[in-house]
Image (cartoon, rainbow, N blue to C red):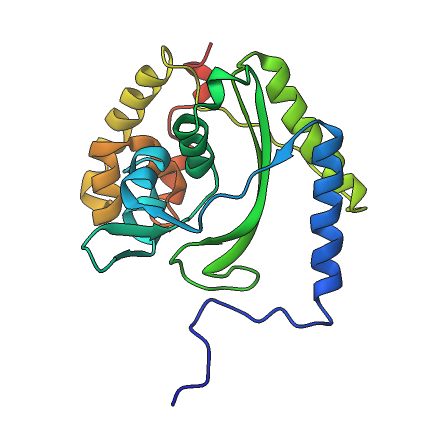
Length: 228
């Protein structure tokens, strides 16, 4: 009999749970101050939801999902992130018909099959917020400000805020093509995974941890040259 636990998971013992309560309660109080309501989605859903919602070319979908078949042969996946389930709930329950702007938050365990290392586990806990029904820049500002206020409330020091963008639907294709042309010069030294990314979604090569690719990324086309 194996009385251990699988690699990548952990027990949260009673002397640690007060710290978890502190973080969770701080998040709930702050989110609700900003008029976000809690949603609790299933821990597992149909695999297709995450393939479509997360993106079939992402590392999460290609390498990290915990996927299994139920007794009727349906493909199910332990949720690797919170957003797809929230979107599915919004559409399935026709929230859009009664609530013009839907602001929700979630707190719970997620699952990704990645290499365990210090501070990273295959079962990990994530909190986040989603706003549906409104797409003006104020919402971006609100969520960024919400994250900053949350970390400050926990009294974390020396914070740095870095803002990134994938561009819009008009400028992203040009940047994607520029990356593809650039990395195609080095196709022979790309790993099989990065070669697949080159064809399917060259932006993902920028996430590569391959030591041979790191210096190439430094000279790759820059988003600011393409994003308006």
